[in-house]
Length: 380
Image 1 (cartoon, one colour):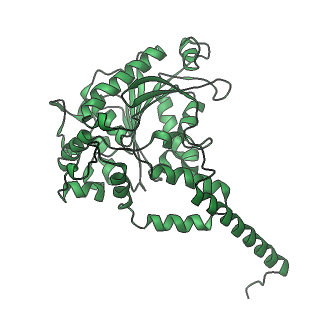
Image 2: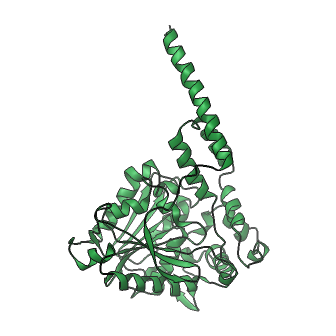
Image 3: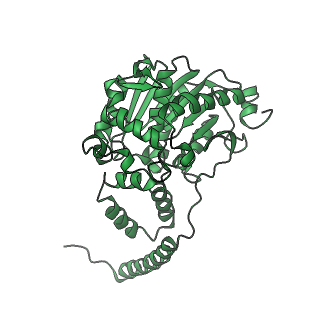
C-alpha cells in the first residue's frame, strides 16, 4: 500500500506551494514590468579600435581578479553579424569570457555593433578582407605578439574561415570555430525560403537597405515552432526561483535581441552560401578571387552541438573534412546552441573542453613578461 503522508508533511507542502505562488506572482509582475533585468556584458573591457559601427574590445585581465595572463599568444574572438555578442559575456558567473580570462588568456573581441544605412553596402569581403585583418593587426600591435589564436562564433566562424582561406599567410597560431554552418541546406526554414521558396532579399530589406532584426528573429522561431509555448510552461513551473528567472531573462533576452544584417552581405550570403551552398561545394569568392576552405592550413578546431536547433548538427558536420589543416580536430558536444558557451553544462563541461584545446595551442607566459604586463593595462 502507498505510504500516506503525515499531516506535518502535508502542511509543509501546502506552505511551500503558498510561498512559491507568492514568489511566482512577484516575479511575474517584475517580468511584465521589465524591472530587475540582469546586467549583461559586464566584464571590464576597453575599446582599442573602431571602424564604422565595429569595435575591438580588449578585456582586462587583472592578476588580482582573473589571475592575469598566463597564455600566449592573444585570443581574438570574431562574433556573428546578426546577433549581440553579450551571449559570450552573459552575466557574472555565467560568462564564457570570464572563464577564458580565468584560464589565463589575453582576450579580444571584434563586435560589429548595430549596422545602419551606412553599412547597407558592406559585403562579406569588407569583413573578411578589411575589418578582420585590421583588428588582427591592432591586436598584434597592442600585445607585441607575432601571431594570435583566432576564434569565430556562429556566422563569425564563417567570416574567420573566409579570412583564413583568403589569407593563407595570416599570422594565426590556430583557428577555432563554434556552431559554424557550412552546409546551408540544413539551416531549415530560414534558409529554405531563399533556397527553395525563391524569396529575394530585396523583398525583406528595410528603409536602411538592411535585413531588419524582426526577419531574423521570426526565421529562428520557425525552426522550433513549439519552443515559445514550452519555454513559458517551464517558466511558470520555476517562476518562484529568482536565479532561474534571472537566467531566463538574460538568455531569452539575447535570443530575441538581434541586429540588422547588412543588405549587400545578405544578398551575397543568399547567393553564394545558401543557393550555391558555396562552402560545401567549393564555390566561394571574395572580391573576384576564388576562395577555397582547403587553403585553411593552420591548426584547426570545430566545435558543434548535437542539440543545436539554430545551427543543426548536419549543417556543421562536414566542416572538419573541408579545411586543409593537418592538425584538425572536432568536438561534438551534448548541448544546444547557447549551451556551448553559457549555462550549467557549458560551465562544467563544454567551455573547459574548449579551453583545454585552446591551451594546448598556446604557450605559457611568465607573470613578469612584457606580454603579461601589456595585457593587464601596464606599459600598454
